[in-house]
Length: 269
Image (cartoon, rainbow, N blue to C red; front, side, top):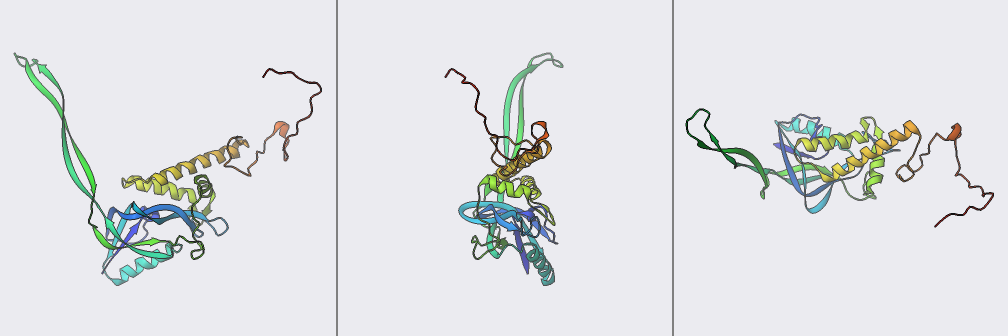
């Protein structure tokens, strides 16, 4: 028997089990979303992290890594027991088809210029200057490379799945990811490592790039606040954070009140 498992989140860079073959490819009609809570790895029950799951969307594709485990029932059982402990927040095991991109080589030749040389010859001789490029072109295959691929997914329902957080505005997700941490580390490292891993396999995810950029922005702002105690008045992402510095070292816990002027002042409109 052979077991194939598709990784689209941390399994892309941190598989954690013994495998026999690794293949880069994609599954169809699914996309990544950060709608799942993690309370035991990079978050806690009080402050859950946001991690990656899959959402069905017709026509979408999700790139990742397929792992093959072969060599007997005991080896497959050991891999599944490890994955079920690790992916405990995922309440579904879905069977999908796995596709690989068909790769072929294109030879491109470019003529740059004509020149004449007579350094070593008595006559002017025309010479053509050209260059060649070898391009690797990928084309989506219509036929699955592997069938019966196992992937861990989650039920998108808050009633039946207690780990499902649902969608949220980009800034809210970035704030949660930037501040959550658990026994295995902080939540922001998870998305940064996922962003890097997808880059390394040559198939970046626009949603991951956008969310990671927002997490970096939030992290930079909170670092400035901690260092200076100053919050920009036009930045509403740090609701509830107040500066600790004020004129003459006095902490202002209430808004400033304007005092009436002693005499009228005329201004031009």
